[in-house]
Length: 397
Image (tube, rainbow, N blue to C red; front, side, top):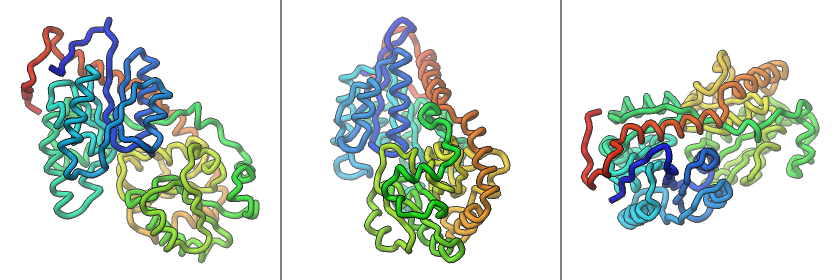
């Protein structure tokens, strides 16, 4: 049997099944592990090798297991699901928390409701694909939700998207947060931050600089940004763009990049890049709620983001007019960037407001406390008597 009972006197064990091992998902899981260990929980993480998640989660206090799983469903799904089931049984958790589409697929198939299961999509899988593949992804989410005790969304936009798509879930919304101790007070003379970045030492001190932090992939929309940058270059003299990150689209993006674009590669610490920026941009095609704009705003930087999941919710009141652009619209993106690069007083004003707002509303400690509270809520709803059988008792949604 998988099911375990829990009382306030026993150590609560949370099993995190995760497929992405880098980027925002890895950061979210690591933050959760750190908070849960501090809370006295036992945290277990199963994830593929590579990336930063395994080492970061272990450093945060988790027991880490290797789970070989690709990003997309394929012929190895059966093996991946059986392996997930074995790791879960061996860890005897009270709660299973599956992060992103692939872990949500394999984890829910492995558990099938025999343990309290939290599924956190971190952006919907059916937004990432097209055609028949999108139809299959949506069909699975509609079916698989029966095995989610709770579906945890990081923004109200993400929840509404799932609801409108016909996913009859039990919903909880807990917005993403960032470590405000890590993303501390900005350097008021932020151009001096460029001196600490060897890649930028050749730039004039007053060169307009835009920074984009994110995995180089279709989701993050750097191809849209490069199309917009041609227009920015024609208007803003000496402007430079830095793409911080790595990913499958790197070579293709480099081949199509206009002048004035630097590919900085992945960075374990993005703070120097964010501090060096005049404007931070993220032109994503889809999101749950991206972390990079929150981090930039906490450091007092104005942002320009596409109007996708969580973006509007993350902005301070009144910032949408300057910070929000339609997705996949290079012209609107170019106009927004040009406006901020040519109006320093507006940049400074938006940056100050963004810092105050983000530091008041986006503390990761509030996020992790809410997730721990969700686990306790789910366990308190479980019968405290003997474990349930392997057959799930369905409840109406």
